[in-house]
Length: 175
Image (cartoon, rainbow, N blue to C red; front, side):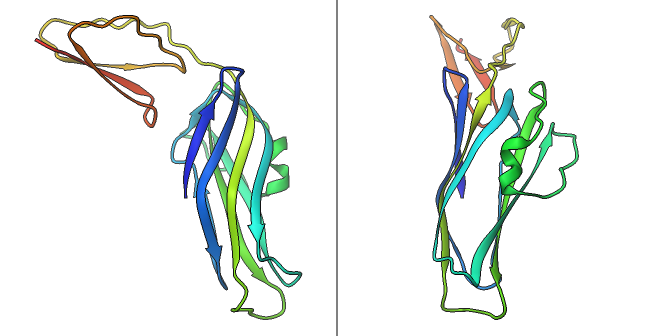
């Protein structure tokens, strides 16, 4: 499953996982955010749509997290505790959601469970960068790491390539 991170102007965010996963006997799913997201203050909601569960066949849901790239993963916790974790907003947050199928008492191969519309919501603080970009003559590429907001009013003879995935902006100087 892929995910979409949407940070809004009112300092709220949603992380929506795209797609549907199917669980047969013995299946597990690990949804890991490959990037560490900066500025998250708290998580206020977690929802998903699970279909096909019975009293004997159901999904167990857990999560773990880390505050910062070099930090260790937390202990695995029940998904109900996701909205109560302590987050250091000065560091980035990385999450992993874990689903696994439980068949109580026996295997039920005819029962298929699906999960979709996984969404996490919360609040964040905008980050900013006080550094200036200085283009040096003879150097055709400069890399600038930016915060959440960058306004460009006018650029002449430059090619701007931006990617939210790596949170960097490439500026190529045209001769």
